[in-house]
Image (tube, rainbow, N blue to C red; front, side, top):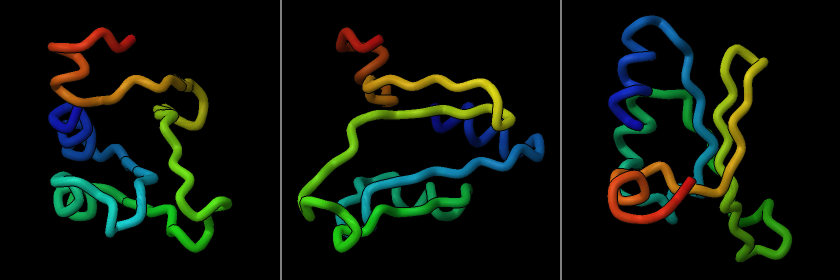
Length: 83
């Protein structure tokens, strides 16, 4: 997924991500903030404060939408049954 997003950026596509707050981001944090417009969901704006959003959405040209709960990782695609 990262390679696809990187290729899109190289073609001039604007990619925006909404991520968990910085203190909860995994190893992709530095890459995401360097390559894309990355926004985070601060703990102070969550009700309850420990809330998490598991849904993932891909919006293309403000028109086409893919919304699901599957993780967008190599393991999710290669090793687990996530659709």
